[in-house]
Length: 200
Image (cartoon, rainbow, N blue to C red):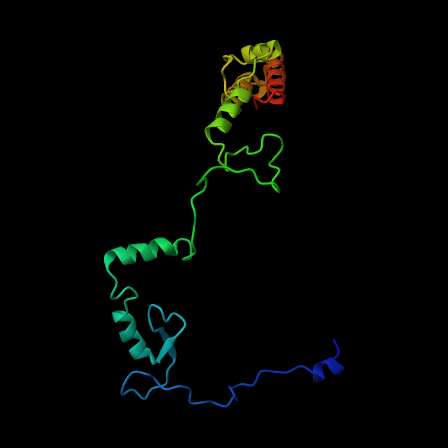
C-alpha cells in the first residue's frame, strides 16, 4: 500500500472532542423550571401533533399523570378503541344491498363470482357443491381399492394412506426384503393416478 497516494490527503479523521458550537436550546416549560428541555411530551387528545418541552425530571412527572382518555366516558373510550382498529377510517360491511350487474364489470369467467363476494351467496355455494359431486370412474375405484380406501375418501385421507403404505412396503423398512416391492409399485401407481385425478 502506498502512503503517498493523493487519496490519503482527502481522508478526514474525526477529531477527539466535539467542536460543534453548543446552543442553549429551549427551556423546560414546567412552571418555575430553568433546566434545558431535553424531552417532548404530548399535549393530549385532539392536539396529537403538539408537544410540551420538558426536562427529564418533569417529563417523568408529566407521563405518570398523563391520561389520553381523560374526560371521556366508558362508551366513548370503547368507540374510540374500536375505530382505532381501522385507523379511524370509515368501513362498510360486504354484501350490503342487492347485487347489481355493472356494465364495466365482466366477472371472473362465466361463473362471475367464485367466492360469493358480490351477493350471489347461497346459489354460488350450491353450484360449487354440485360441481364437486362428480361420478367416480372405474380406474379411480380400482386405485382407491389398492390403497384400501372407500369411494368417499378425501384427498387428505388418500395422502395419509399413501404415506402409511409406503412405510409399510418399502424394502428399507423391511430390512432389505424385496418381496413387498411389487406391492409398493402398485401403491405408487395408484397414488399417482389418484393425484392426477384430483385426489392428491
